[in-house]
Length: 292
Image 1 (cartoon, rainbow, N blue to C red):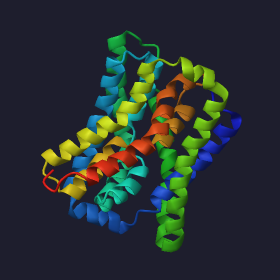
Image 2 (cartoon, rainbow, N blue to C red):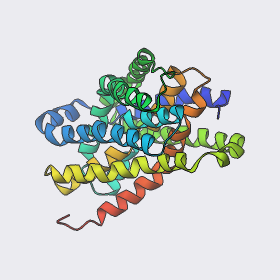
Image 3 (tube, rainbow, N blue to C red):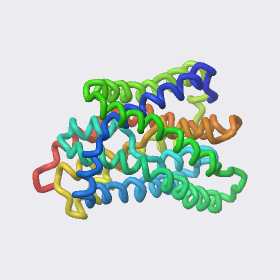
């Protein structure tokens, strides 16, 4: 499932807008508040990088996925949280400031955590399935992560100059993130509908289960560690909601073209389903009783 030249051209444009929109939500006050009450955000960070890579690894082994498809799933599980979680945390009446803080921390710590998690889980997976042919291009991945921090910084500068334009950029960034997925998915469906019909059901199951499993385990972890209900909602939604555009960017920039189609299968399936699944989860956790 190769991308067209137009989709490859649009990808960096939309990614730039998405990350600048994320940066537009940040201010020095965001970090000061985080320093005053770090515990909830650190619990959320541990949930993000603790549960999601483990879930992806477990699904890859349980569903017996081929190494390239399994690697795409593990990359999906190892990246930082996605910005859609902030919107649905607001809808779910969760702790929005905690959600934004978690997105920021998981994105910034991604320089260390994403390569580290990939080293641990990808190496373990390939040892288990007996495939050592897929190399993880750690240097290229770190370079990609460094590149995407530039628009985040630009977004922060924009916010310091104009709150009005920062809010516009924030909305534009969310639209750009959804547009990345919509454009790529539409193109894949148009060109590769026959191929999609031949994909094993276990691959679809992997794309469907990653997010909801993260939502549930994130909520239970936050509950077990004593966070209040709005904080539990934020941790839950942030844990299961991954940054799909970032995954696609890492694959397109870091890996050779011949392996990209298989690597992108699960991330694309995840990207198609995660918005309605996050909306459903936001609705469900709003209905959890006061003592739950």
